[in-house]
Amino acid sequence: MTEAASRATDRAPVDLRTDVPHPARVYDYLLGGKDNFPADRTAAEHGRSSNPASDVAPGANRDWLRRAVTYLTAEQGIRQFLDIGTGLPTAPNVHEVAQGIDPGARVVYTDHDPIVLAHARALLASNPSGVTDYLDADLRDPERIIEAAKRTLDFDQPVALLLVAILHFIGDADEPHRIVGQLLDALPSGSYLALSHLTGDFLPEQWKKVEEIYAARGVTMQVRPKPVIESFFDGLELVDPGVTLVHRWHPDDQDRFADRSDELVSVYGAVARKP
Ligand SMILES: C[S@@+](CC[C@H](N)C(=O)[O-])C[C@H]1O[C@@H](n2cnc3c(N)ncnc32)[C@H](O)[C@@H]1O
Image 1 (spheres, helix red, strand yellow):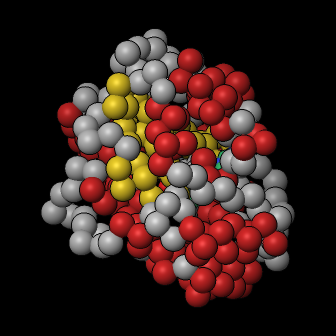
Image 2 (cartoon, protein in one colour):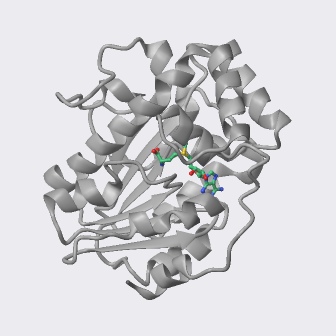
């Protein structure tokens, strides 16, 4: 286990604040996981009753993550991943997908939620030829993430930056475009960005309701329209078909959501290369 990994797992117990819903645990519940508490399940069910996409978007996003990491590893030869907003362990995890193709792949996971930290050990079960590491850090502090990730990843070699279903938890006040730009500036040419993001383009009232459910519990959530999501890729070379609903991006025979409607998916995603 690396230095950062032991820091992640040897901490004193933290307050998981089980009385308030946390995005990682709500998402886990919607994916059928067991690492969630009544407050998370209540918020998830409330969202589900307001918005039919709540049932489909998480799984469609997760399938897309698997396909994007497969594409980056198998077709673009990427061997290093910086996954920010990792969430609770969910099979297959990023390192399982990447190391299933190249056992030497190196993955740094990052999240700010103490429950993800508490489960980090499951993310650190690397293939011995590769490395996995975990940083307890906030996306709103990109400098800290870059400095800490450099202990595990070689920033002179291409890195795939994964911002998968996290940026809708960063409100405009926290300048998400500046954050993405700072992270990309630290990566060399030939690196990639894989980003997915919830949209209210198809069910605006229903997603507004979900934003309100989170806001009432103190969590910022901001779904965004396609042009704003596209602008996260400014200056990069988009891989075909560009920013699209995730179930339409490089579908394969393992995809469980290929036949769902656009409004039920409501997540845009894309992969792009830094020139
Ligand atoms: C919906 S989950 C997505 C998990 C995984 N990336 C996926 O797509 O399957 C969003 C994750 O982002 C994390 N997150 C939200 N805001 C964050 C922040 N400011 N810094 C770090 N992680 C954050 C949450 O704790 C949660 O685990």
